[in-house]
Length: 477
Ligand SMILES: *Cc1c(COP(=O)(O)O)cnc(C)c1O
Image 1 (cartoon, rainbow, N blue to C red):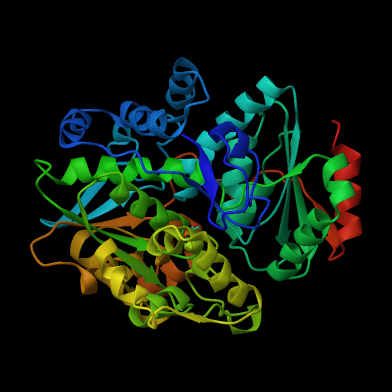
Image 2 (cartoon, rainbow, N blue to C red):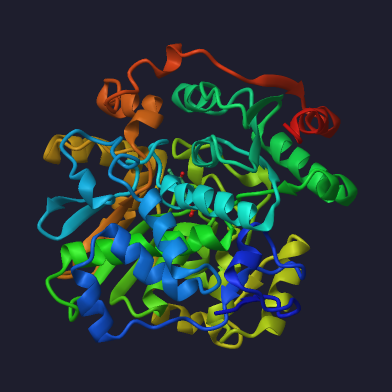
């Protein structure tokens, strides 16, 4: 299995060769050169598998340059009940991603029981083990530089803490993260984790990461890497739980399922698209956005019109405050019939800050054939949904999951089971829960005193040189 670029001008590479990198050298994203397909017989066999077995069955079709026994060991080490047992006390953690049934045909897929209480742990924990393995094999080390507004940074830090050959330098804005998110990150005491608090906003953090990464001499000398949402291994790891959920809510493989996915960078729902391309009987993939509804606009109208920072609203589902979906190009590559020249042409418009329209030429007409529909949710919608689910079912959900459920219930197919992906636990977003329910969110066991733990971080002005200085000081620790 080789990986090719959506822009068509980069050499095809094996999984391990794209594992540590980001974009392909031609600016595209890596995709499998062809999707492995599971047959009806394969699916029958997979139905009986537990999470680790399923993860291996899927990943072994996507990874062929890591010895199978090693890949199996990495999967078994990652997907343990212990690592994914931070959720509600009554969850069946042995399932790794348990399904919680609200009504007969409406389910929540618990993806947020990992160490940082967000679905990003599902992929990031595997990435931590893959990175350590691959770096050791290559005799290399890496300095991961990133910017976070909350969930990504903490998931990356908890995945990489204590890993040999890996150091993390994570920039976060002085304001903007919830108190819980700050405590989660800054309380890490591991020597290889460096929290850098920037006197600025999230966009300043991102600009600094770009500036440092664009200094190629520095990047090379200090072995700078990233773990952002375009990383192929992250997308691949997210494919697994679509299969797990499908088997959990169906009795046989003739049935179909709708998935509703709270979306920002289109990483999570892209994994659903890939699961479907690999043969999973998914009927609809419901893309749920908040007020930052660029993706909803596309799936309703065929026009993709990314927005800049000035037109990106700060909402109460902040992890979806994204107006340029970094993984969207992967789907468009498939939609064009894998026409890299057309993808290059479409993204030359995006890179100029323009929109593209897939109505002329008829491509938009083919979107529904891939199962995609969409909708958006507002602050009032998510508060109302949190309230209703709490009253009717005694289940407390976070604002992102509420966006997904709201849109899912609107866009689902009658008679088809609906699975809503739970992308975070309410404990991370106390303000929204307080507003909706007039009380503080439930705290998972063991995290009661998170805010009072000692903190470890450095504060810098919003300047690339200050950040470079910290990297230089620790790059060889
Ligand atoms: C990252 C994140 C999302 C968006 O996921 P994408 O893969 O970027 O679409 C949604 N909800 C939460 C809580 C997140 O952390």
